[in-house]
Amino acid sequence: MDALDAPAFTLRQLSFLVCAADEGTVAGAAARLRVSPSAVSDALSELERSLGTRLAVRRPARGMTLTSSGAEVVARARTLLAASRELEGSLRGAPGELVGPIAIGCYPTLAPTILPPLLERFGQQHPRVSLEVVEATHDRLEHRLESGELDVAFTYDTLVHGQPRRATLFELIAHVVVAADDPVAGQERVRLADLAERDLVLLDAPPSTQHTLSLFAAAGVAPRVRHRVQSAEAVRALVGRGLGYGVLVQRPAVPVSFEGRPLAIREIEPAVPPVGVEVVWPAGSEPTERTAELIRFARAQRWTVATGAAA
Image (cartoon, rainbow, N blue to C red; front, side, top):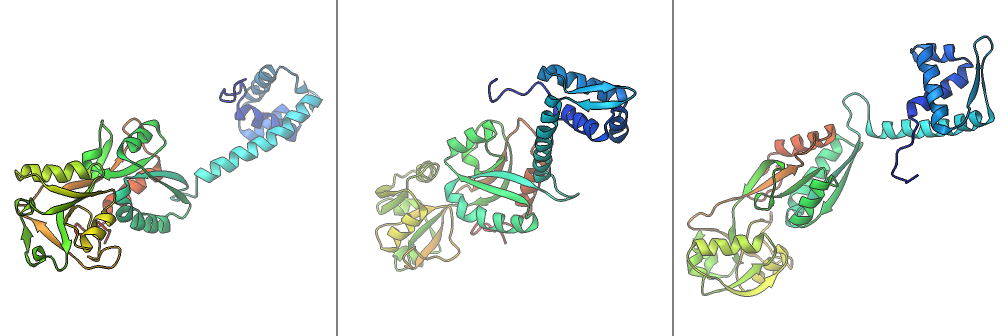
C-alpha cells in the first residue's frame, strides 16, 4: 500500500473495538457510546473484513472475547486513538481559543514594516497560534498561496495576480531621498524632471524597478541611473554618502542611513499615485478560523501612512 493511500478501516471502527474490549460486550459498548448494538456489531464486522482477520468471538450470552489478533489490534488502536486525540487537541482549544499554525507569506521589502507589530500583538493575543513566516518574491508567494502552502500573504497591490481574495491595509506614496546636505534637501517638494540630469541610485528589485521608472516616464523624462542595488537600505546608504538620490516607497521612522548618515525625505511634485499594501488569501477555500482572525486583526490595525507601521 502506498504511504499516501488511506487505510480501509476508520478511527470510528477502532474506537468501537476498544470500547467493546473494555466493556466486554457489544451491548455495553453500545450503551457507553450511545449507539445501537447493531451499529457496534456492524463496525466490528467491517473492521474484521478490512483487516482480513477475526478480532473477537462474540457470544450473546457470554459477552465478547478478543482473539490474539484482536488483542494486538486493540493495543495498537489505543496508541493510534491517543495520537489522534492529541492531534485534534493541538488544533482545537477551549471555546473562543485559537490554536494551530498559520503560514504567512510576506514580500521581503514589506517584512520590516508588517511583521513586527503583527507577530508581537497577534502573538500576544493568541499564544497557542503558531505563526510561521515565509519571505519570498511575488511569483513564489502566488504559487504557494494557490498550492495551499500559505494561508495568507502580505504584498503590494501591483504584484497580486489572478483572483485571490484581498484587502488593502494602507497606501504608501513614493518619495525622493537625498543626503541631508544636498541642495534638494532645502526644498519642500521635488519635481522628477529637475532630477533627470542627476545620478539615481535605483532600487533594482521588482516591483520597485518598474514602479520608479514608470514615475519618470509619466513625468516625461528618463533618469540617469548610476547605481543599481537590491535593497532600500543599500539605496539609503549610498545616498547618505552623496552618491546620488533615491526614489523609494518605504520610509524609515528615523531618516538616517544604515551607517547613521542623516537623510532628507522630500515629496514628489506633482503628486504621484500611491501604492497599496494588501493582505491576500486564497479564493478557492474558506480560511480557517485562526487565519480569518489574523486577516481581521491586520485590517483593524491603525497603520500609519508615513512609515507603514501599526500605530
